[in-house]
Image 1 (cartoon, rainbow, N blue to C red):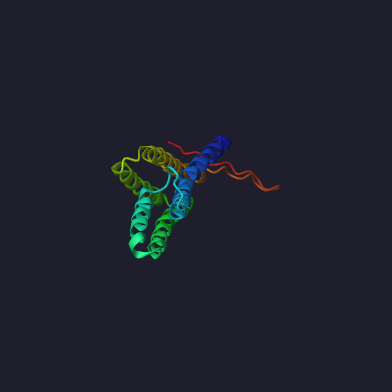
Image 2: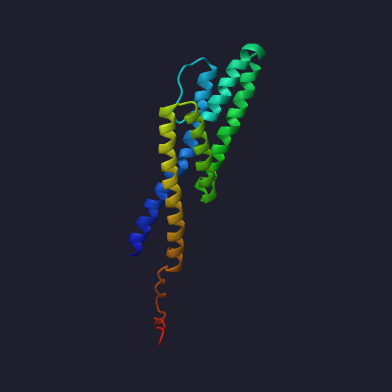
Length: 173
């Protein structure tokens, strides 16, 4: 039975970490999309944050009048936004379960930006990732509960060689 619990804990741990890793993907692909956008490229990743795309769009428009320094400032904003997702991912991997909730809420708000601009494919990917992160959160909660159970019902170690075996007291009614 103890091996089954350890197997279940391992499976939950993998699902939980998989959900947490989405934060890093979101941050990295958003920054790559911003860099491509500022270098004149015409593509972006589906998982890119809508908010960084809005920042980039404003910066491209304003740079025609104010110069390329606006793009640098926008890139700094993009790095900050991506940094928030990296930080939430790091906290999620440290089992700070509230970071999952905050990250999912922020990503859902970002999905609303994509919905407002009718970027359907990115919106659909946002919904998929929200579900994946939610499954990671649920697995993390189950893992924490399972680990508590494992620690409370840990097997009693065998007595040392030469020590008498002490029988456990059974409750009487």
